[in-house]
Length: 125
Picture 1 (cartoon, rainbow, N blue to C red):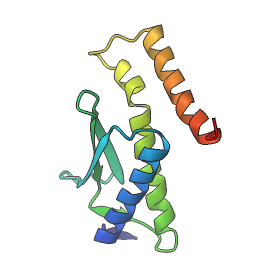
Picture 2 (cartoon, helix red, strand yellow; picture 1 turned 30 degrees about the vertical axis):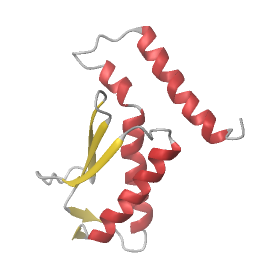
Picture 3 (cartoon, rainbow, N blue to C red; picture 1 turned 180 degrees about the vertical axis):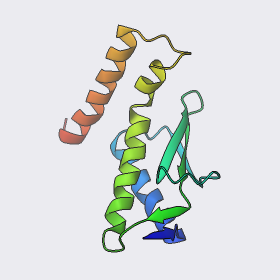
Picture 4 (cartoon, rainbow, N blue to C red; picture 1 turned 180 degrees about the horizontal axis):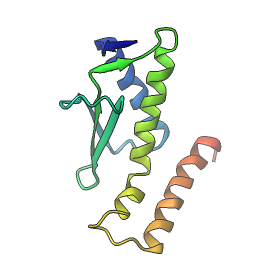
């Protein structure tokens, strides 16, 4: 079933995105949520980022496919997915043409990601 995204869906998405942003230690990032102007049917959402400004924009599809019984969980999973992409974005950038990939760059990012998960699984330290 296809429905238009509702203000409630958007607010729920923002709440979950904020939660995962904090959980993954991305507090220095500003995250904006906007409706996808192109309204691609391929994805529920996609993210773009700028590491210099620390601004990420998540574009939400205007058409939302959801089973009403599992809608909240689906929205949470989509928010999780987009924030995980932000967490991994430097690795994705290193594979791009403007950033020569190096062992040191990749190693640094891998350890940065490991540290995020250490804080989640071992918060008392």
